Image (tube, rainbow, N blue to C red; front, side, top):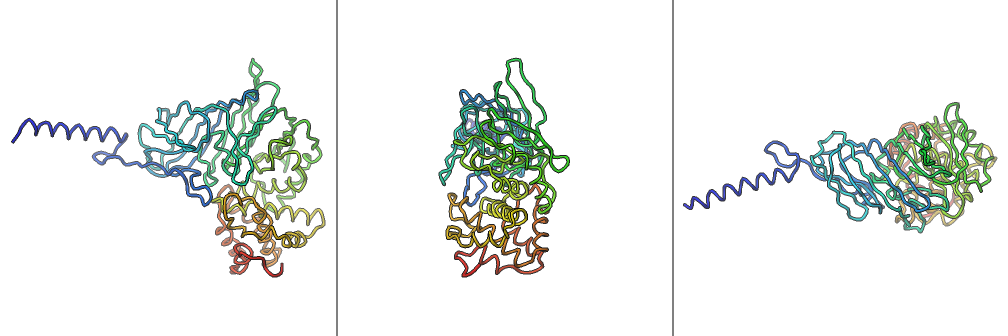
Amino acid sequence: MNLRRTRAATALAAALTALALLAGGCTAALGGVRGTPGAAGLRDPYFPKLGNGGYDVRQYALTLAYDPRTGQLDGTAEITARAGQDLSAFNLDLAGLTVGRATVDGEPAAVNRAGNELTLRPREEIREGAEFRTTVTYAGVPEAVTDADGTREGWLRTDDGAIAVGQPVGSMTWFPGNHHPSDKAGYEITLTVPAGVEAVSNGVRTARRTAPDGRVTTVWQASEPMASYLATVAVGRFRTETATALGSVPVLTAVDPVVASAALLDEIPKILDRQTRRFGPYPFSAAGAIVTEDGTLGYALETQTRPVFPAASFDRTTLVHELAHQWFGNSVSPATWRDLWLNEGFATYAEWLYAEEYGHVPARTSFARAFAKEINWTFPPADPPAPENLFDPPVYQRGAMVLHKLRETVGDEVFDEILRGWPAKYRHANASTADFTAYAEGVAGRDLDGLWKVWLYGDGKPDRP
């Protein structure tokens, strides 16, 4: 026996064991590494890499400073989450921007970047069920995203500021997070901008202060859960007004000075009052609207509590649509992007209901008009063929047709119960198409497979409406 070789082998084995224990961070006694990385992506049918697994975000605290002159955004994101598994590492979605530093529970975390995936590895594993706080500092000039259908979203620069919109993926251009609609959270957004411009976001404005250098800081609290694609920031020379809706809900509107829209803005409390009669209690603690000058944003969007509109889209029908989304899409959010028709079908049907009740145009007439348009029959509303089709007419118009056929099948009384009960059952939660069909059948007390097969999932146009 070679005693020298035996001793060397023993020493090497001990050293390798020690290195293995150190490499794993926090370990179970004699058990090796327990945690595993959270998934990089939630396998959404259209955006498989969007979102991240292994944790659930409870709160975002975003501190942002923006310079409209240079386009520079400086941010700190403090993200409070609960681990859904033993985590050795986890991911955040972030497009562009440069990460300066990251910590987990106050301790530095290793950061790796691959495209839009930011991987953080804390010093010690995070145990399942534990609440942890991640802080990321970042900076840069945010870039807009061009979607598959050619529309632009994300952080969009304007002549005097910016407008941030995030449907379906653009919110990752201005803050790191879990950017899938299934992970909703509360938000506190602190915005600092130069003197002479206003900064507006979601929820209730809880503070406004001016620094000696003239910069203005505002703090916005969105207490109710919000999907990240519904978060917004608008910076510009806005004219802001306040009012009250539903007895106690503060209404804040911000309008580009060149937009003449005061009369329609004044109707927001009245429209919300009418919608609560049909849809049930308003689900949020604030309301309002942001109207921008044309040329930057090409569409309206139901950003939570404060939908945004380019001037050309700010009309009564669109306002009714986006306010209805506060119930359908914002409070009840889609489980995946395949369930988007639940947002848009309900909001479109809200237009038909408004026209029926206040414009004397029966919903059946709106249904017949939609039925006659061949563009509404290119695919089933519950199954868009590709990401570029998510916002095509069948999702909106045929989605609304599904609801009208449901109304005709079950009768007005039962339909009204569904219309109010659906946003009550899934208030501040997520729901799928299967959840809706099961709920409607439960309320109706009958099987509705024939209706869903033809109107919701059918490939062809029925012979008659």
